[in-house]
Length: 291
Ligand SMILES: NC(=O)c1ccc[n+]([C@@H]2O[C@H](COP(=O)([O-])OP(=O)(O)OC[C@H]3O[C@@H](n4cnc5c(N)ncnc54)[C@H](O)[C@@H]3O)[C@@H](O)[C@H]2O)c1
Image (tube, rainbow, N blue to C red; front, side, top):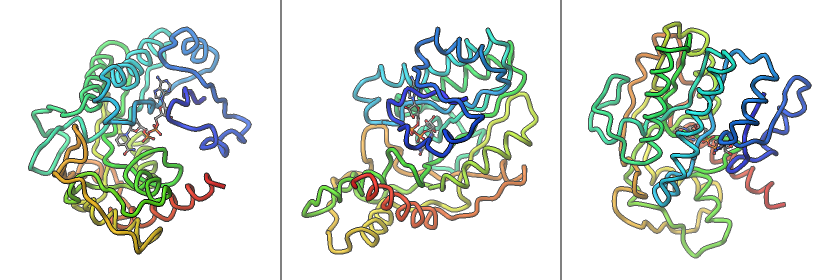
């Protein structure tokens, strides 16, 4: 059973799933508690995978209501409906943004946790709410702290944005920041693999894991160059300057994935390999969308 209000997702991204006879999709807002309740009550749901959130971080800075509603209230309502329907297992898509800015390699017990975006703040609050729910009614929770995730069927993100800008045929390609921002990038196929393994093997009441590639990440400059190589080799780059692309952008971070490796998961792709693959995939996707 899938629920999405399609505010940022698209129905066409679900084409393959919709062909499966056992899959049911509901276009509904998780803020609409009555229809959410009805959907959960009508199916024998045992685990909720709570993935819905705001994915426009600058948008959430411009209007703080966005992350309150789509990042936090979605978690609050999900837990409320789960408690009523006696659903006791939740898997939750969290983020590196809960850590805020740190120089050291981020481990699951790094702190203090002071996010610098409303999005990160509302994800951290969601994690806290899940932790509290483990004390009261949840039997098990799995929290996945994603890094930057890239790959096919993208709806946003750096590669998507750069390719969209290139499609408008500008004299140069605008890149937010000075290109030195450096972060780990994980291909969505590796992410799914990791989530399934954590769900299968994480046997504590509250399981929480960083998921990421096994490297120090790659720079925005490298990503912009990979995009140009694939789509428009002669277009020059133009940087807007500063080491942050937008308010709330964490300019650099590195992830420790030692904890998830102990569960037996290894990423297949490096950040650079993931970028190269995602550039081809998203380039193809945007060409098809324009037909
Ligand atoms: N992509 C990344 O790099 C990244 C990094 C860290 C965490 N995450 C997390 O992963 C999850 C998926 O993100 P994504 O990148 O695929 O973004 P996405 O925007 O494609 O997916 C989020 C989905 O949530 C839906 N949604 C939002 N508010 C809703 C509401 N009130 N009711 C019902 N549906 C609602 C949107 O329509 C969208 O389809 C999110 O929780 C996000 O915070 C993503």
